[in-house]
Image (cartoon, rainbow, N blue to C red; front, side, top):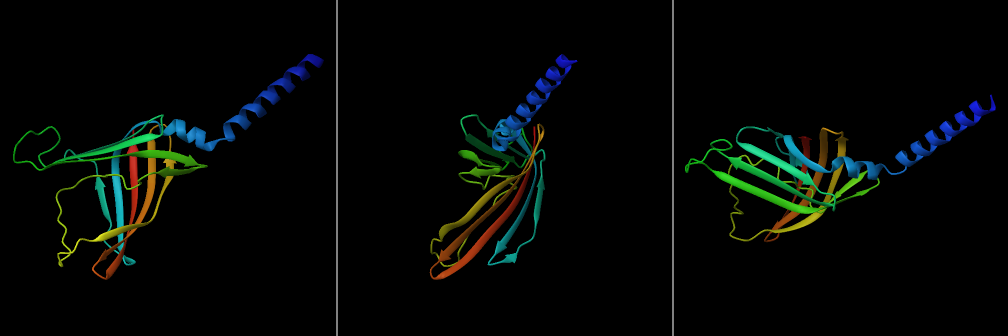
Length: 186
């Protein structure tokens, strides 16, 4: 009977030790789970100009756009976005083709994800133009940036990103805020 108590005590001690090791470093678990290539399936973007909400834009993966983000063990990441107006794989010379690439570093502070640049190059949906109307070049300053992991499983990653800048043209300054949700799968 005494051997049973010793055996049960050893099992209980082992369980307590393993639970303590597992729970003591949530960022270590996240670091392991985030490694690898994640394919963007959906992006939801809300913009604000001087606090006024702009229309919400939801973009889903399609045959024209492809995006992935790769998290590497050395705390570097690369995010790549491709757009082909004729569809992926089309080689027609009349197609609009665009590629955007972002490289950076990532780390964890507890359960918070830190990205050197959280504004990942989501889906490119076509061409755009920019004009200040004055001929002056805008001066942009970073106000704040944050990235939060909303969901992280073996097959799903959801990132919530907020990014705010000010842009000054001549003496006119505006505040731009982007709120983005990226939905990735493996």
